Length: 296
Image (cartoon, rainbow, N blue to C red):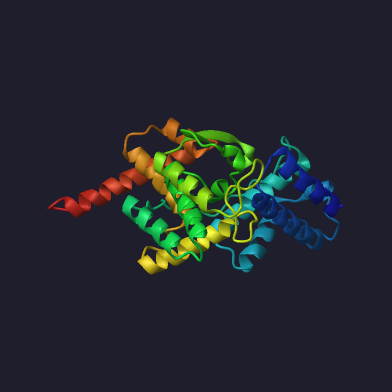
C-alpha cells in the first residue's frame, strides 16, 4: 500500500541517494500528495500497479489541483520533477513515464555582493550580537561563506575534526561528498578568534560552531543575523548568506578562475550548475559598460 511504498521511498532517498533532510522531506511530501490524489481520482488504493496505470492526463489533473493551491511556475516545476523522481523509484528506471511539459521558469541570475558590503554585513552582524563570542562566531561563519564559497549548512556542519586548521579545509557538501577548499589567513584567524572566546571547547565529532546554549548552530540563526544587518545597512533584500557564496564564485571568475576549478571549489556535481556564473560575469560587464560609456 501507499504507506509502505512511501516508507521505502524515504529510505531510498536518505540511504541510497544520500539526499539532505530537507530534500527528503520535500520529495516525500510530493509522493504523499500524489498518492492521496490518485487514490481519490482513480478510486483505488495507490500502489505500484496504480502508479503504472496513471496517465499523463491524471498527472496533469494533479498538477492543476496543486496550481489551484497557489503554486507558482517555479514551484510547479519542482513538483513535476519530484513526481518523475517518485515514479522512477516506484516503477523502475526503464519504465515508461508519461511525458509532461513543465511550465517555463525564467532563470534569474544571482546578484553578487561587493567585497566592502560583505565585510560591512559581517561586521554589523558581529557588533549586534548579544555576546562577544556569538559576534565572533557570526563573523567567522560569514567570512567562511564568502572566503571559501561554502553553503551555510556546510559552514554550520563543520566539526572539531577540522582542527588544527592549516592552509585548506575539508568540507562535506550535498550527498555527503567531500571537497578541499583553500583557507584564507583572515578566515582562519576569524575561526581561531571565535574558538578562543567560545565557552564550549571544540572536540572531535562535535559541532565547531555552537548555539548560545551549546547545541549545534542552526543555519536559521545565521540567516536571521544577516537579515538584521541587511536592514540596518540598507542593503538589497537579496543579500542573503547564500548570496555570499554567489559572490565568491562571481568574483573568482572575474579574477580569471576557470570553470572547472570553480566547479570543484563550489562542490557542484555538474559543470552546467557552474556555468551560470559566466552569465553573471557578462551581466556585470554590461552594467559597467552602460554606466561608463558616454554614448550608452
